[in-house]
Image (cartoon, rainbow, N blue to C red; front, side, top):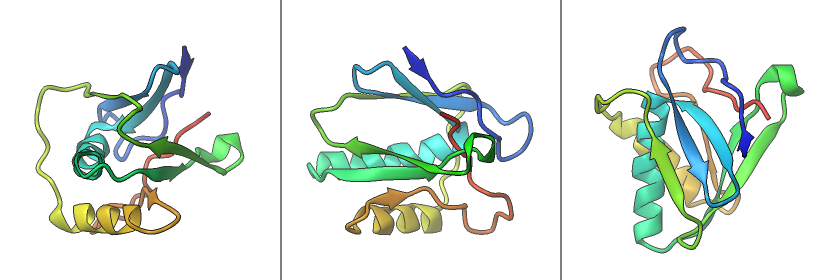
Length: 124
């Protein structure tokens, strides 16, 4: 099992969920709120059978790079939230993420509109 260590949370103490990628054993941690938005955008693209890259910025402690995964219907994804609550979704952020997913370079995780805090970063 490959596991990405806990990354910086949007606010200290925010619950971290996981995106489990295929059968690779890769577990990528995201703040539950971020994961809720990713689930909607990724789910919509997959229902349409549209493949794309999903990228995010890595934690600066790991060299401040970025990571990407290929999203397509043949790769099983599992969204595991740390908390049972459903998050209220930010429509503007969903639109931004969807627009980026429709670009050639794929979806890039950005900061939620109205937030001054950087997006979660995935340590490798």
